[in-house]
Length: 277
Image 1: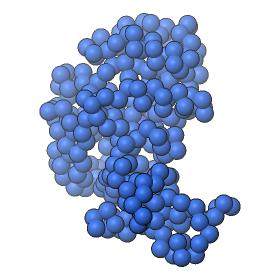
Image 2: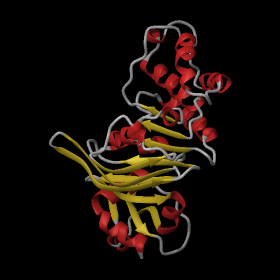
Image 3: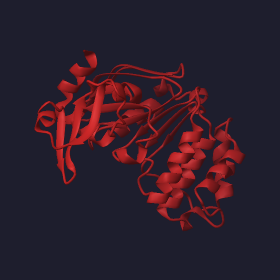
């Protein structure tokens, strides 16, 4: 679906990627995690063909994104974190925008907007930011592109809307579609993502499926000093020490993605060695 080899990209004097390698397969919802400024949005834009790498190669759906061929652009959709919607009725916007995407399904679009409780009357500029965001998410899903890239999709959504988002997204994935979501709000997507990518210092620091994480790591609360001592990462709380431990019992442990992310950033070498052992 997407193959990235030896990717290098810079903004003037700032190097973002140098020798980045990544492979994405259909049938997955990937969570792309990383600190602010590590290149999450930049990576999405390179894959979508909005930015061009200085060196290396990106193959997406059998195309080189930088060539921006119409046959490729019809099969990829990037939902940006920042956007502008014109002051026109929704129906008119759909009429003009959907024609660029041959697999767009209007019935699906209205199904998603209904699920989000989006008011369909009036102009788009009259909608709140959260309503506009949900409108764009509905459109992104109704496009039915094999490759869907989403940059911080839950930003601006309230608690109920985030729950609606998870429900709608869970029903949208299929074996032919690849979804890559860049986010720093890990908790919002904890039960949705099935593979975790962590980017740090211009490279992919961690790339593992949720099942593999559950088998290899244990996430627990404990006051036991011995458990705390052998943890990859620990964090104090009123309920005890929150720990990320090697899973020595062979039991599946529900991953805490926020704790996992902190452990990878702060103790990445230990975590990487554990997954290679």
